[in-house]
Figure 1 (cartoon, rainbow, N blue to C red):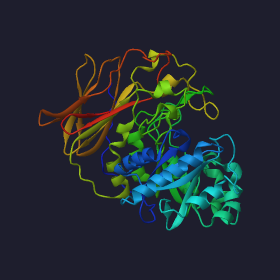
Figure 2: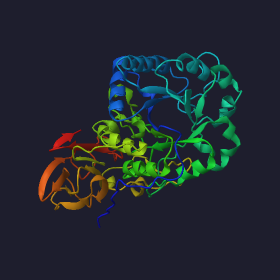
Figure 3: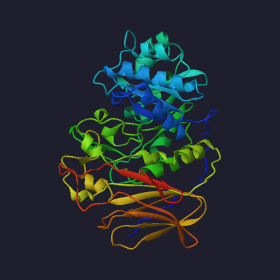
Figure 4: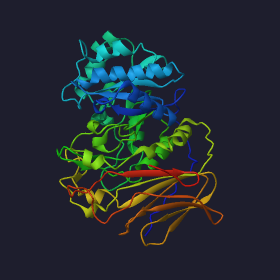
Length: 444
């Protein structure tokens, strides 16, 4: 039975209003940029700008010898592009878990020292004129960020929007005076379900008078370190979360991530294999995600309430390239076993093709795999999304846009094989992503 769901471009905006202009950021793991030069950063920033992204959130772990060099490269790149008219910005997201140690508040190589070095630059992102800063967790160091605490005393006025999601909405109320806004890391579903916006609405309700930063992510497969590795359901997530931004109506959106290859939710390019964790490389190689950026100009314009002229038909599609039963789980589990009920990953992940179409006008969208006949879907002007199970089908899926009985554009994706093609025999729970636009221009 075909699972059909159409996401149309008309949504009601709810009562919570943004304070002025809205912003979209992309989360960049600086620890995964060791091979970057200033030129590489300039290329990444240009790609992000072309997608409608306003700034990079520089995720920095402690201690990491890579951080000083690459933060300097990133700011030099942003400032060089600003000289040519770019308005792209950067800000810090201090990672209190990813580096192995906790960030010191003050002193050399500290939160305050990085802020003091960079917030006065033209490339640093400011909201309402105040330097913007975030975290990944850090609930053991909340006092460092208090009004009059060591960080603000040393670094001055800050617009602080932390991710303290582990507190839960019921635990944040004691710390509202410490923050200007809140960032929820709860952007993936638990178990064999699709993600809703209920957690976002709960965080908004728990942080009255504060701005809200909503996380949007396309996928999640933690691979390569076996501690253990786990998967959450991605499937329709990229389309679902962008539609949910219109209902939640946050002041900020942070895309997670630009380059976290080890968790499979990267939307940026794979620049250098040395920047991929060694254990994750086998799952990342041959799995480009660049096409997830293709609809971002449309999604971001809709979120910001801007007009967007659809000048060409486009499709994007993603799927894993073999059924989940086509390889061994190799220790991968469904759900984070440290905090959630452990399930089989093959229950979590659907064997399906997930595809969206951005159409200039109403059209039929068809998907054909292997020896099976094409399945047709009625698409409306604007954004549409569907999914279609494998049902044992193999081969290269063909995607077509048909209008007035004629195929106006089409392309094929990478083949679906009956079993995993990975040399280690493991199931690859990562996604392959492709797209095309106009008259059959296939994009990797």
